[in-house]
Length: 129
Image (cartoon, rainbow, N blue to C red; front, side, top):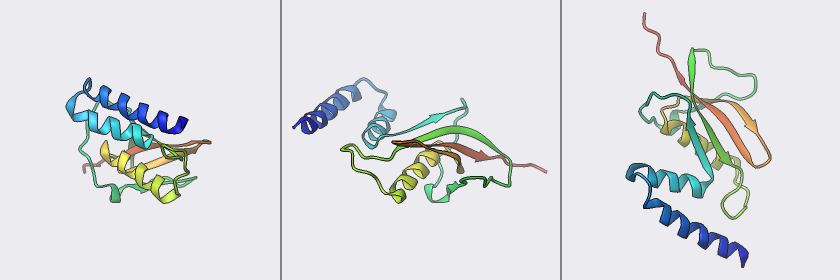
C-alpha cells in the first residue's frame, strides 16, 4: 500500500512541477526522473544530439585512440521506479541515449556503485590538417 501511495504521490508532484518548467525541458526532466537517469553537461557549449546506436563503450583500461573531450556525466539507476533490477542491456541502452542526447560519441570511466552506474560522456575532437 505504501508503494502505491508513493507512486501516486510521485506522479502528482511530477505533473504539478511540469507547469513550472520550461516547455522544452519538462518532458525530458520528467522522463529522466521516472527512469531514474540523469545527464549533466560539463561544458557550456551545446552540441547537436547524435544517434544512440553510434555511441561506443570504452570499459576498463580500454581507451579511445583519437583525441576527445569530456562533455558530461551520465548516471543511470540499476533499478526501475518500483525497485526491480534492470538487465544490463536496458541500462546500456539508457546510457547510450543519455550520451547521444548531449552530443556524445562514447562513454568512458564507468563507475559501478550499489544502485547506480556513472560514466563520462566524451566527444571525439576533429583534427584539421
